[in-house]
Image (cartoon, rainbow, N blue to C red; front, side, top):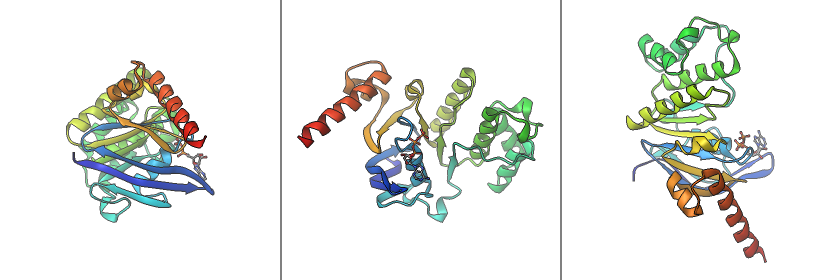
Length: 244
Ligand SMILES: Nc1ncnc2c1ncn2[C@@H]1O[C@H](COP(=O)(O)OP(=O)(O)OP(=O)(O)O)[C@@H](O)[C@H]1O
């Protein structure tokens, strides 16, 4: 299978603590892959390593066939951080048109990206006058307007209303169907069910790398939340046996 991302034995230390403990996995091209795990499990750190902004202690991260962070990848990889990065003194439309221009896209592309995140009606408003959820969507539009081959989204739907969340997930799948690869973090299990594949991470270790159905089958339950719990318990029981 053609992979957009391959991690091999990725170890990351932050603030003198090991936060990724040798993660190996792959993200196939043209999929929506969910990165799921509780707060502090290492999702953002893993994404930072994929984008190439995280110092790694050992292991390799290969993105679109090149080492993560390579200059050639800059225009091919889009990254939405948890903190929206928009210009407060520009309108929604101006923000997205600016990022469109940076990526060699036109005004029509910018307006389409604004519509895709449900902000057409707010297009003329200054970013400083938006709610946090709206600002986050402007940031998302700024990422998508560049039409990157790989889109890395850190909790893109936090604080969004359910209808909008459903629309955004539908858009993610349209992009994947057109060949884009999306790595999307979340700690909400109902979003996990919407993914083609799941990476389940806890305390810096990968617990599962499978489809949602594969995760359910491995745990022997239909509810993904319960499946995740069972995988955690099984992993802890195994670790306990190895220690004794
Ligand atoms: N700048 C930093 N310096 C030192 N340690 C950090 C730093 N940022 C995060 N960490 C630690 O790294 C670990 C993993 O954090 P990370 O942000 O990757 O988790 P996460 O799964 O994305 O959490 P959340 O869902 O809350 O965003 C945590 O223990 C956190 O305290």
